[in-house]
Structure formats: structure tokens, C-alpha cells
Amino acid sequence: MADTTSRLDAIKEGIRKLANLAGSEQAEAARQLAAKLNADLDGVAADVAAQPPVPPLPEKGPAITPLHGEIRCPVCTLRAFTYQKGTMRESADSDTGFEAFYHCLSCGHEAWQEAE
Image 1 (cartoon, one colour):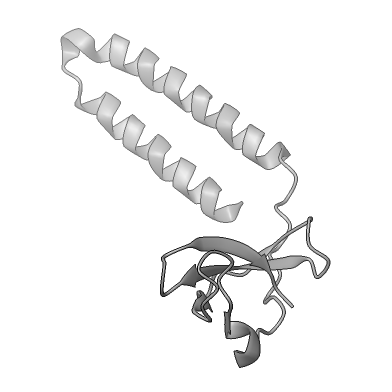
Image 2 (cartoon, one colour):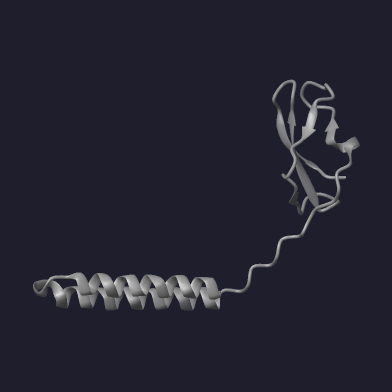
């Protein structure tokens, strides 16, 4: 939240400087637009502050051993269905709670498989 607040404050400062750059014939319109934009930013900041915090991602999924690094491809049945490093994600549909992305080095088939 602190990062968002500082970024919004910097935007407000930029709006203020931009309004001051307007010529005398447009100064009032620039001031009104700056006030409206600042109010909009305050609304965004309030919305962000009201949102529940995002739950942290798990630090790491289950370890995939070399045995599971390469399995038989469901399409071409060659033992070339290879785990793509860094593609672990949570899955509500799997027994382990995680799945990994595999790519077949032979036929090019790609799919998510339950991590074991």
C-alpha cells in the first residue's frame, strides 16, 4: 500500500505542475481539471485501501524429481514429455494441489499434468 500511496502522490504532484503550466486564459479550466483528477485519484486510493490483502503465493511447490522430469507423452507415447522448469502452479482439481506444465520434445504436445 505504501508504494501505491507514494505513486499516487507523485501523480498528484505532476497534475499540480501541469495545471500551473497552463496559460492565463486557461488557468481556471486547468485548475478545475486538476481538482477533478486529484479527487479521482483519492477515490482510487480509497478503493485500493478497501480491498482485502492478496494472499501470498506458496514459496515453492512440491519437488519434482528427475524421475518426473520426463514422462511418456500422451499423444506420441515417446518418453519425451518434459517438465518445463518454473511452471508449477496451484490446482484445485489435483490430489497434490499442484500441477506442472509439460512439453513433448518429439511431437510438440503441451499440457498441464498433476505434480507428484
